[in-house]
Image (tube, rainbow, N blue to C red; front, side, top):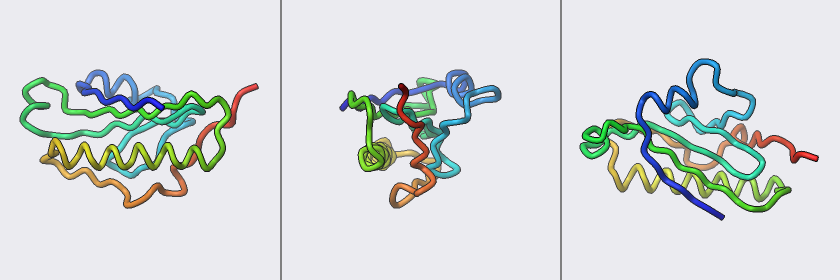
Length: 119
């Protein structure tokens, strides 16, 4: 399993989640969080205003949780989502974000919209 964290600027965020971006595998973690789910993992992004991010011009945080398991069960998918959510909560607390970032208490049922495995 791989977990990656990066900072993004407004342009990068819009390129990934703006008009014309793919929407069939959107992650539903609430209004403050953008994300994608794919067969191998999940990407989560949210705005986190703090002095360091503002200074760098990168107010968005990206988190990717990815596994090398080709055909994941629903249980594995939910575990990956749970890891992404816990990591996001830790980032919000650690940075800390001066803007409110509302994250769900647990993984919502609507968040488990992983696409089926390919051939």
